[in-house]
Amino acid sequence: MSASQKVLKALGVFGSVQSVGILCSIVRAKLIAIAIGSVGVGLFGIFNAVIELMATATQLNMRQSAVRDIADASEAGRRRMASAVRWWARVLGMFGAVAIIALSPVLSFISFKTLDWWWAFASLSVVLFCSSITGGEQTILQGTGQLKRLAHAVMWGSVVGTALSAPMYFLLGEGSIIPSLIVFGLSSMAASLISCRYAGVRMPWRQKMAEGKGFLRLGAYLTVSSLVALGASYIFKSFLALRDGLDAVGLYQAGYTLMVNYVGIVFTAIGMEFYPRLSSVAMRTRIATRVVSHEVALLMCVLAPLVVAFTMADELMVRILYTDAFLPIVPMILFGIGGAVFRAIAYCHSFVVVARADGKCFVVVEIASAVIGLALNILFYDYWGIPGLGLSYALWYAIYAGAVVGVCHWRYGLHLSRKSAFTALAAIAIAASAILLRHIGWWAPALMLPACALTALLARRRRA
Image 1 (spheres, rainbow, N blue to C red):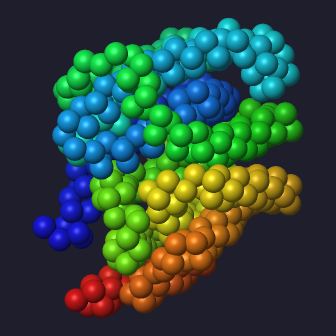
Image 2 (cartoon, rainbow, N blue to C red):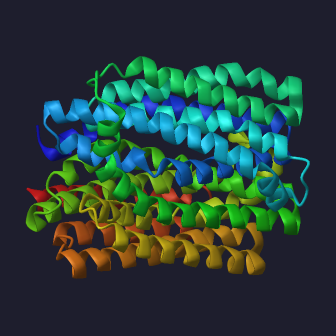
Image 3 (cartoon, rainbow, N blue to C red):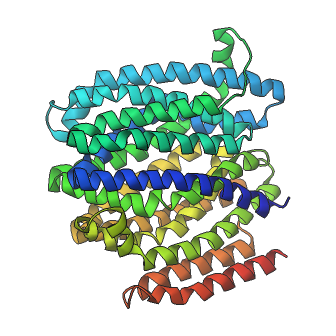
């Protein structure tokens, strides 16, 4: 099976299964928008940001760093690593639960300038513990190549969590946000535990601790960078809440979800297969160059028509997924969707830094990126409001892509092939043209579809 077939197979498996998860996410967002309004969407965004921030801080990015060690190990080594991952997942999960309870008054004051919400943040301790256990099981599934089981775990966690939480929005109103997050966390944990049947080995706890030192060391570097990125996101949401209220946070969260999370299904699906494969050849520059170049070209061919489709259906998606009250985010997602192309380029190259376990370099690049992104968001929001956030997102990822490509070239000697560079430039031109044509009419970006097909054809011929 060729590399393209393997990637597309992974995309097919995760794309089809995660589409169910995306549908569940759409349903939840729609129900919250109808039952609670933009305030509910804003609260949901703030609590989710805290969960992500605390999970990253306390779980040491084990979900990403341990995959590399499991994928490279022998069968006996994998079983030892599985036991170590499960043990560390429980320990870090309990630590995270205690930490958020202790910090709940501080988080309440930072988010809402009052201590009245401390109980809500303390209740999220259950979600943190569940996310740690879920992450551990999913790490084992990905590292051992059980992608179908991993996809099913994600799907059933989303389906069950959505089915159980949906009635809460109408029965409890704003009071449903915390219980729904807890229910979703428990559902995801249960689905992952049922799906992962990979047996570990019996080891004393000291050995489990020792087995985890390698991936925790890399994870510590990843955690620092992730904390800065999530912290920047949290700071910006708090800035919006304090300046223009929760309605502004709700609009931003809705727009961000549309232009980032829904497109992210492509990145998640491909990354599940790409990251373990890259990890095994990351130290061999020539082979790594071919792997990354192939991935970039393939992502460009997938994303170009997707960006065109988004520009055509931007207003329709907002009306379907939310309500007319969210129409102000249309310009935001129109300008921001172009950033998906730059994000893909950065995505493939950032995996190289992680796969080579170059933690210090990764931290420097990610911290710089987070600071630039926060500054651009505040600056562009001051000048152009919600629409300006789409422009800042696209510019941010263009800068980030240039930085990480430069790091891979100068530090590791890795560079894109001519085919990939051509395909990337073509995809950028198509995205920019589609955004400009959208101002003529919703149908105008369709004029770029032949260019998408031609780009894919030329990329395939160049590969041949």
